Length: 376
Image (cartoon, rainbow, N blue to C red; front, top):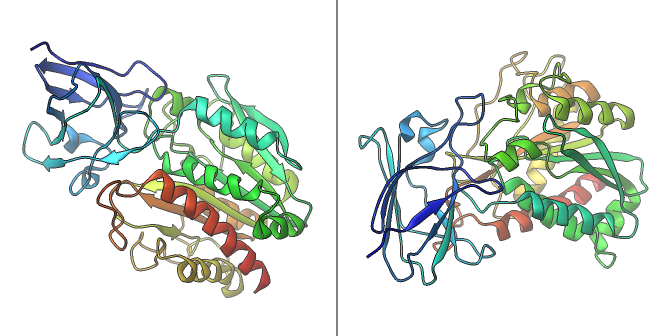
């Protein structure tokens, strides 16, 4: 039979084809431009209807997060709408670390990705639909290094200034799925939570902070190979215009509550990282974060507090990161939300693992928690 074909020359595509023999392929992940980061992959296989594919992605011990591969399952779709998990295994000692994926497509085209992709076309649809909703204003905060707009949506009439940002790390597509769910709720005129939040707060939403990395198929960096979530202390027009534009806009409005949305490669759970180590932190300031975290933990079984990152010691916070810099700069509640690439251990889903649908639901749950936080 003929060899299958594999390509990735499309929005957010990333793979290098090393060899193909029939329905078997040996591949590698391309590094982010001007950076050593590599982990995100997204490619298409054609000509494999009814044939069992064996896809081996090699060299993964040199990836950004090798601990992300054990117990991970590749995502696959044949219609680019519904993404499922497929049989996947990892051999650390094989070919520099090899992820082996098996899948038998029913049709002649199947799409494979590290997590369900969120294309720039879908991003523009999301922004346009939200901007057309009653009471929503659009503004362009600035431009990326590739000249793409940094889109911001604002709505609400209240005094509490809420900033929500996502996809500083472009391969963490969970974050923009979260944004889609949150915006579905917040632009629904019939939703009681949304109505009350819009009355009491003014929202500023940046659904994708890194459009260049998103389109280029990067894991973690922008067009210049810069990790935007290490630029918040001293952003520059030359290296990180995306962060500079967002931080300047925050300075103009002030910030009372901020959430920066991400995905984590290794930890099979949803969790927050806070700002425990920032200079001059008081118990009253930290309680703004811990109170919100406790509310969300109680409201949804998809969030938990047992697993997460080590907490910084007093004075030991990395002030180049969004959450720590914003919390310190504005003396506000701020947090980094992390969602898994792996399955969700506390509430597993054998068919999809952690999914876009659950990202969207968590976005809605976070808004319900925000309203309760305001009340308490």
